[in-house]
Length: 324
Image 1 (cartoon, rainbow, N blue to C red):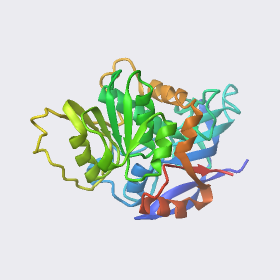
Image 2: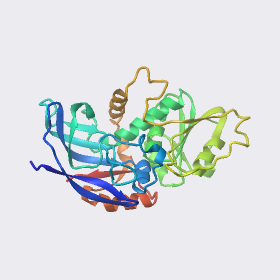
Image 3: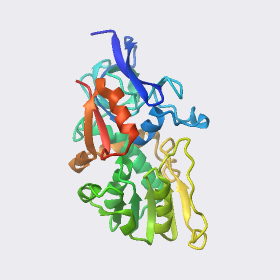
Image 4: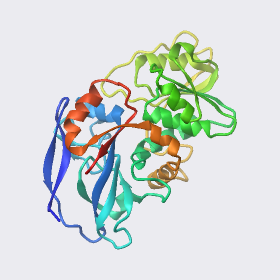
């Protein structure tokens, strides 16, 4: 086995490269993992790639096993699926999920890996981190049986929120996006679809995940009396303007943030970060979710791929990186 690994680094605004790193021998309680697939969480990783992480968030934005510091050079990412090559016998040969940057082989503590459930294939497990974000959002939003739920933004997190909410008894879920091609995806997820101008109002819960100022404005307009608008987008260092005049106060709306760094308050006493991630992994046992992974490239092509992914929205929902 080689004592070298390769990893992807952001080395400047909109620029990245593959760098060699020494691969240390695992100590007691550690594993060597061979990467199979990693996922690009486009919203956050595009902000990192383009150098748009605000100075105030440098510490909070650090990912597990990140190397370097913002803005650059930095090794960043958190959607990794691999196979254990060496370490504790009970883990050898098992496929695992790990919150680790894009890297072909790496050493991590046993506590950092989550074995995949037997009914979740490795190629789909790259959605685990985004499923965890979506699960936390549904908890934060307090979606209840029978609710009318609007989800704005059919990226990977928005689609997963819609999929989760559509499985709550009696809920009617409308997924809203500017791209009409997302209608087919919505149908596979058990949700209705609408373009922004056609979206229904009087929602009990609105989850905003489009990352746009216009989307947040639409979210406030679609919310019914005393409804909750959950802001799931993160804008980095970009300022957004939203009207809190008009009917915002008379409709007594609740505008609430959600972020995956902490377990949602309503579950924090009974869930840990690890148990939440394990639950997210178990929820990936539906083959319908494969439709969200609609782009793929080789690891060695990632510097060029990230330039494409971060320069425009396009049709990509979840991009999967293949290590072969």
